[in-house]
Image 1 (cartoon, one colour):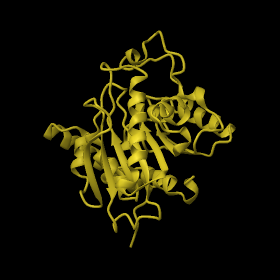
Image 2 (image 1 turned 135 degrees about the vertical axis):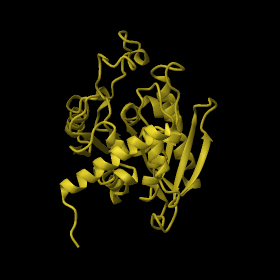
Image 3 (image 1 turned 180 degrees about the vertical axis):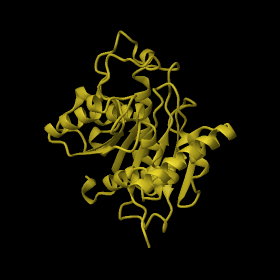
Length: 303
């Protein structure tokens, strides 16, 4: 049997992306919606529309691994990941990320995909309060979904990675939600903004009261030796969030503080396909799912 070479795999992934975009246009469905349509319903058990607060936006979906597809649960339960999507803090819906829940659940990870309030309903830092409450809910309820609360992670993409970073690095938010910052076994940031003032994106400017930026809003300022182990993934080139200023700088600063950091640069992905590569049709583009799942499942990750 002849295996496809790198160029063949890249061409196949490119064809799949084009097909997804064409289907999205023809069906008036978003590309994320197409990815969800192509996501299998086997391999996980979904519990949807769970409230973690009183606002209609304060809801989450839980995706539990279904043995044997994900393997038998380890002693103490599966690791737990709380995922926050991007959207410049002005858009996003947890239901668009079923493919994330399926991908991680099939890898043996209890996955929580959480909504949070967005601008103009709220500005910084209220969405961080929501995210912290979602993580506190996941810690309390982990065992009820087959999860191990000692192996709790936060993960985000783009502006959602900012949310995850602030929860992992700045102790104010989890503490206010009644959860010790040391409760996190680690965090995952994908193409996130961690040092982005002054803000050039007009959509994000009002979220942070441009030009009167609030003090203490940048994750880079909260790096310390107390930070949890970290996975940072970034495309080699990103027109929306500068990889060098944000991801690479944060990785270097965490490493200098003695924090275990895994940095992965994905040269075949862009800002958007980095997260889309979790979906089955695009996994040949980059091994992001494999890398993240391996980081979360690492035997020494529990604390």
